[in-house]
Length: 180
Image (cartoon, one colour):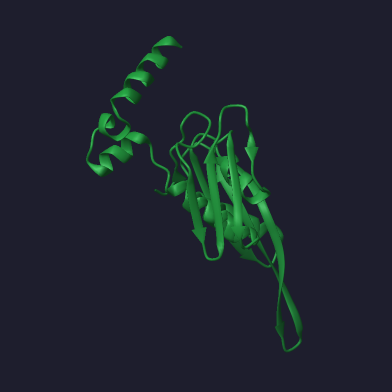
């Protein structure tokens, strides 16, 4: 789902990485810059963008525009994610695990910036393979795309919530929510 410019500006941006790259030409080296940014509303919408330009501000602007075009809605359960998930992109693999309230964001810098902008406050993560920030961010983004609520899982499998979790779980969840 793409978001347009006429929506309210409630999104915050974070620049994850800026790199200077060189292209070797006949007369020497030509330098340009690329920027990786995360855009999110801290309420389950997040997007990533990558922009390249000859100047740093132009690269950041392009990457923010790309991030706003690539925004997705993720499923959050309270302040954490509904279930464990693994995201893969090229040789990077990111493992995300839900945690109890108060745990905080136990994640590396690249993963932390994505889940923070998505609105997740309690999560445990581990990244394997590549340590390239771009690949880790994209692997985290792929993991967040896979998240689904129990109701979505039951619907996808064509069974009821009672059958998915068992009758005892449903009764226990109903009594615990009434007691709060």
